[in-house]
Length: 123
Length: 123
Length: 123
Length: 123
Image (tube, rainbow over all chains, first blue to last red):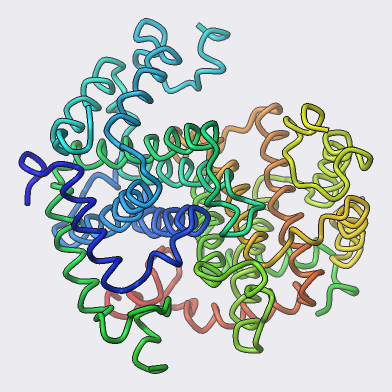
């Protein structure tokens, strides 16, 4: 599989099979899935806990491999959430990027990291 | 866009454009992206904070829309992470599912939620 | 030590000694401490990941011991944060409870879990 | 109130009263409290999301006030957790520091941030 050749739906199907074979859907309420995403997100953070931002960019092969596994764990729960509760992730992302484009118009947001609520107050 | 017709790479490219237009790559160290994923994951959790699992399954249209936005926020950071640090998410997921298949063999894991470290101890 | 006989300051001092002996203050920026609190919070959540609320109340001795350790981990980082950045936690809590009393007046909030932003809209 | 003059028990009692007046104990299962701690921890992180470690140390008065509120939110949930499930936080912290002293002996841990699992492997 590769990102170029793989549709979101194909990943969803692969994951659904994995979950269904283990009869795990019954544990996968939205509440539990949201907890699981947060737990895996914390495991990803742990890889960079004591590093400065610039240090965190130096990814050895071993570290990169670990990070790939953590990112995959989070993505698996997201895709499973979308499958079980009929969410089309691609269109959700497309819609969210449109919302963010309005919150963070290029002319105001360019090169700074201020939150949209503070963006126009501090030009 | 739809999950059936959209490749991971297409989403990555869309997100890259959004980030690059705002000159935001400089903030997106692995450390900061991992924090951002965790922050968005907590916003998703907040939607279910005081609900029981079964209650969390009742998604009104308004709630579903909010959840789609939160899931999209997390997915955007994950895809941006993968783009910036040359990670193929599809193959990472494929590899992780293989690892998990060994950790959680169907015959032991079916229908229970025990962690793999406890799976064989309590058959 | 016991909660009845131990002041917050005494705990802070104990923790400061532990950190200073290891020369760890240099890693303890507010950013890193906030990440550390979130990481430990996720480890606490993991203990209840797949349980329903009511099931999570059944704390065996082993489980209770594990939970005490996770709660301690979070509290240690909070107290260390307060020490290093001159925050009086007792007065911060006192002030926050006053703010929350206004956000959640007893007559509106009693027995329901709605967020303050929705509290008066849905009486 | 001040950290010097306030016992943990006194804070617990203050918080218990606040919760009981609102009849909120019924929502405060260990599962829900662990989620709540993680949600508040993420709000604290958000204050430092795009800053480097060193930048995060510059706390303006406004920022310090916000951080105090977030730290208080987390501490309130921890103390409420301990109250409801009969946990003495002081002795839990004392015990955890002893465990950590063995995991991170001064002679090995001094001045470095390696995890205990890697501490002796990379002296």
